[in-house]
Image 1: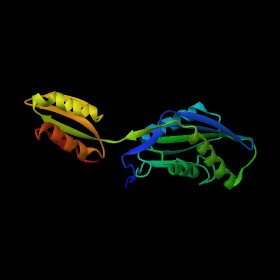
Image 2: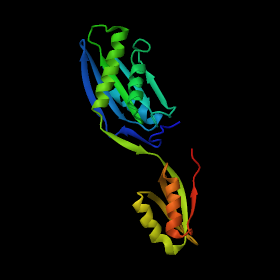
Image 3: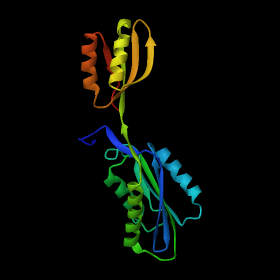
Image 4: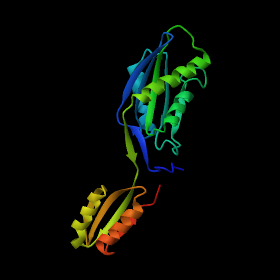
Length: 211
């Protein structure tokens, strides 16, 4: 289930960030970006591999979707000893509770072996430093709805939607006005009540099924 405190709102990257750490002569270049889907995450990983073609390893982790509830998450050690890179990277992302995020660490081996414990600390630390420098915004999940109203109430409903910052996706004019809107999840009950009050019960709202 989603977080109880803010179930439909969660932090995501506002833009990409790149940082570099040197640990016992090895360079760890951390690249972080937004990725709302697995396809976006994999595309970013491929891009970083092309950006750093001479790196010894390209270890990565991503969470596509809500940081707590999404099943779209994965990681890779990319040749490092099993469990020493991708897993600690993903652990940091989960601990930070950030969604729609992908991180790639390009390691340039410096000739000194770090050992399993040293690698876990190095990759975890590299992600931690990257996340600390990452600008964040918030993802607000929405639910589609259709609002049917008489023509005389069009301006009233437009003002209400604007006041509640609800995005109008489409307006159809048939025997009545039909608004297709995106309602922030969690605000459905409030919208229904206010729409009834503002239109004296003349509005009909049809909410799309939750995915």
